[in-house]
Length: 512
Image 1 (cartoon, rainbow, N blue to C red):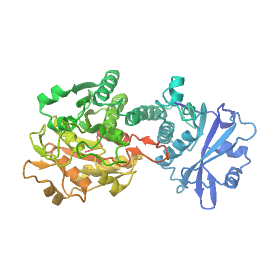
Image 2 (cartoon, rainbow, N blue to C red):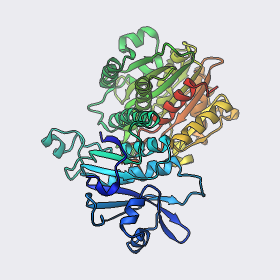
Image 3 (cartoon, one colour):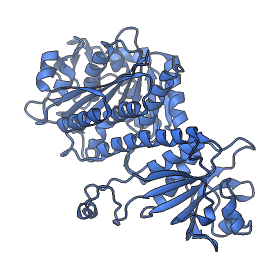
């Protein structure tokens, strides 16, 4: 991953391959952002005019490259758009800094060192820029020929690796707050990028057993207690949902429990992740064109895994338990059929009307297991429904909860860290559609409002009196389009930062 340093050096004398500066969209044209004063001075104060001549406007995501002025040791200046000029004395939005830094990092693929002269007014700004750089510099090329030939696992299509080093100019290397901000950004993004790697790994290399082994290794490294339930243990425990979904696959299911504990904690959060390492739809087979990206159906479990490890690395004063409900949903002679009835871990029975509504089945068992420990709150994360994508698009996840205040708190945390989300209701009238003449509940209900129906189903498996929220990340978990901001093509790692922020707020006593 890109190495980060804080630097008090002046831009002209810094040995680097490029100097990154910010440009904002002013009322009368582009305006050079604070942090780049030395660069602007070297252009005799006319840098904004030069950029405008080159077509720059300061719009978000815009990149303009130009030769560095005489006397600079770096040969290149990279001007990146920050979007609209902020109100006077308002400062720059953290997400604008993240996006700009991420765009610049992507534009500098193959570069050894870049100096980032973006606006840094405090440690929080430094943390935002650091996150943007590390997120934007991500690449996944493990399976590319160039990577295999070089023995390196993170190389671009053209054989060039990501930006190797980033120096944040205007940073304060000896300031505790600045150092802490960089350390936090590094820990969180390293784990988020690990989640991206998992999502991007093809399903022939990442089945439930392999995922569980990766979790075990990380837990050992970071002092996290881990428990893995294999098929025999799941049968003995009565985990009918997870077993039912995994019944058609040659790769057996797993339930992984990761427990991070702090001696100073008096609060306990439980995170539950859907981990379908490949989703064919089972007997209710998906139509052609809908299978190709189904390796991403374990994004929720990847996010939960990453968040627990990040909490441990940050030493947060809160107990965090992660539950990874892992299975592969395949059609075969042993697969669960539409019409079958499963007895869940909670004791309730579920009539399976559609085997492609499998995520809610594995989550139901994990939610009940999490509830048995009586945590202060449970948050589940899942690529659960196409209906949520129809409602909110491909960049926003939905939030449902059994407590409006908690739903609002989760939404605020998501927006704070730059993960677009939207609160969704749980309409009681939709519950009746899941009534079954055969079992306690069916795994399908009304077609309209399918994402909300799924949330209502999950609510049935949350212990009484426990605060709970459900994040349906079906849209933003996997980016099938081109990269934007600090978001790559493929696995995005969405929800990791929201979960970490919830853990931080809980540790600080600011979340309920």
